[in-house]
Image (cartoon, rainbow, N blue to C red; front, side, top):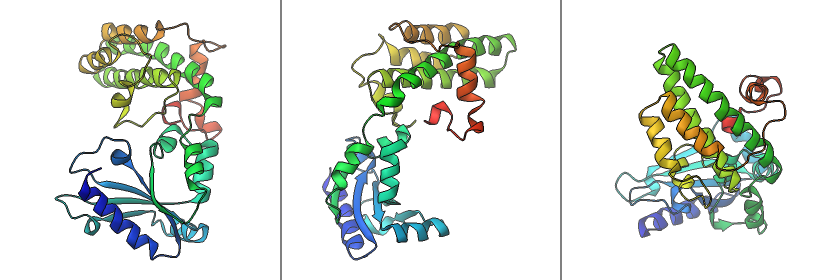
Length: 261
């Protein structure tokens, strides 16, 4: 971490130590993940008392933008207010992107000695969800090959591009799940897929070819490379039913769609 980022973090700590409602400062984002650049902003999660967090939930004041805490060109501090109960919920049933936000996190200051252990639990891959998710991703890839055929049949450029992006997302997520790696959300998806120890040959190249030239040929080539990588456990009721459950019926029980889980 560069010196000017460290100075900004020190200013955040100084500011939040003076606030009796603040329990900890957590540094995340690109700096924590080792992906920072000299002009990267400083992403922090500010752990508040339950009462202070509740007040902010009521007013909608859940974020902090503080360019005055950074002394480098175009620098700023991007803060999100959370609470310990927020972290407990993330450890229990958080989405993968919610968990990933705390992977590699740095705690420059805390009043809570148990916070490091809690963050480790948050950033742990949700093993109980793994098999079901992989079945869902397999069903999505099978459905998307059919959808790409429909896009070509109807000469529908919107559908072609939607299928291409979604197929790459689902294929990459299947490989991440197989390697027990959290989904980092879209900005860093390709970066972390490249790090997966076990994956099909030329996976990212095939994904980029599909995105650059969405067609039945490039879609089938990418999807089949993933589907034939190993003998995946298939959805017991077939891919059409599983696709419908994960994409069309999630509103019935309030679950997030598969792509966000």
